[in-house]
Amino acid sequence: QLENWKGPSRYGSFQVLWQGLFWVTLADFEWSFVWKWGGDMDGVGQYVTEAGIEIDAESASGIYGQNLDVKVQALNPVNYGTEDEPVGGVDIQVSVRDSGVLSSAMRTCTLTVKGDGDYQLGDCDTDTFVRPPPPHVALVV
Image (cartoon, rainbow, N blue to C red; front, side, top):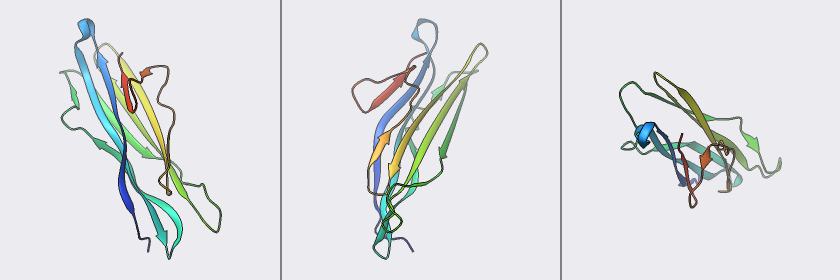
C-alpha cells in the first residue's frame, strides 16, 4: 500500500475566455491543476495520485447558444527516476472547446507533475494563450 502522501499541491489559475463583438463574454472557464505526491511503498519511490484540475465553478459560464466542453486526461505515466528509486510522473492535459452558432474553437494546456513534487508547465497553445504575470494563463479570441 502506498503511504506518506503530501499535498494536495496546486499550480496556477488558468482561464480560457472567449469574447465576441464589443468584448461580450461568450464563454469563460477557470481552473487550477491539483495533485498529491510523495507517496511511497515501504519507503521506496515517490509517486503521484489524484492528478487533475480544480474548477472555479463560479467562473464557468457561457451565454445562451454557446456550448463549453471540458476534457481532462492523465496521460501515460512515466518513471523519471531509476528502477531502484522510481519517481512517478504524469502529464495532465486539459482541453476546452467552445462552440456556438457561428464558430467553434478548442484550446489545450498540459502540466507534468512528478512524485518528488516537481512540476513543469508544458504546451498551452502558446500561439493563442497570452500569459499575464505568472502563473495566470488567459485566452481572448
